[in-house]
Length: 326
Ligand SMILES: NC(=O)c1ccc[n+]([C@@H]2O[C@H](COP(=O)([O-])OP(=O)(O)OC[C@H]3O[C@@H](n4cnc5c(N)ncnc54)[C@H](OP(=O)(O)O)[C@@H]3O)[C@@H](O)[C@H]2O)c1
Image (tube, rainbow, N blue to C red; front, top):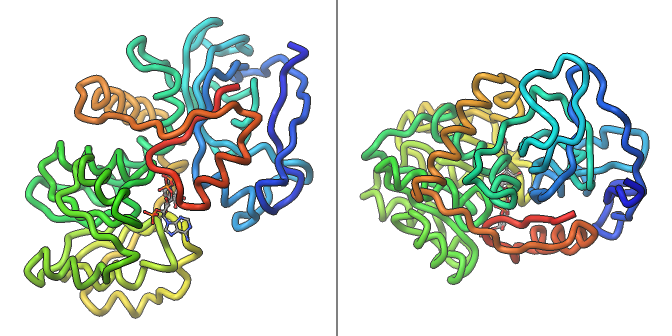
């Protein structure tokens, strides 16, 4: 246990803020479980925290990282759902860039034998996000046409396959020809290179001027106004991220252009409902098991090289998911 460590950021800033710190392993309290990580996911959320665009939640070094898989090492009083040695996975904000951690048992899902640890670590945040976006934020129906930005990213590749499996026509956006080609292989019916083309004009052409039923927008500042203009009348804008910066230029009065609906959901409100978490994870694992969703792990890096993983994500060099191995 002496080799237990975390990759913590000293203060809000660049990826050079990461450094290795030794951690001690306290016994789990009531309702808690201690797990040893076998794989940890990397997400844009971690970049927001590390960079300071989300408030620093502690008065100390911050261990970011918001999804992972591992093995239960110890259980606290009152934990009946999980046992030592069991494989589990979870998503919760921060604390995952570590060899070990304590967690509330209510956040864990049991990992089925046929779901590998790396896959689980890559999908607990991104795949459950795709699940709620398509089933709760705007429950898509077969035959509808939707717009999904950053289609070649971690969430985007999962969403494209899920939309195709549901018989939904998905129009994606991505930066550059390689990412567009990859998104096309992952369920998207058409993919617009939004660095080279005006995506609103292209959506108009692809929908005979009608627009889309819903735009899922995680890019934020650079796309939000165009996403609204790409909607059909009474369409829904789901704003769920800000990879290019906060979309604060959007005003409520802008919705009057087409009597649009706007929602700004977050995964962790869904995860807090245990019945939803268990059902959604089962749904996601089922889609992976059936082969309808194939998880693309773009990069696997040692946990200690997390700075490199962040640089890739921020530099728009990644496709699919990045996984860290402790
Ligand atoms: N609200 C929620 O519950 C929730 C949950 C999960 C994720 N999210 C959000 O969903 C988004 C996707 O997350 P992810 O981890 O899967 O990341 P990702 O999509 O793999 O990476 C972000 C992508 O955004 C695009 N992008 C556009 N402008 C950018 C810029 N200025 N800087 C960097 N990237 C830019 C890039 O794709 P192109 O090169 O193709 O433009 C980049 O690859 C993030 O914004 C994340 O915060 C929200």
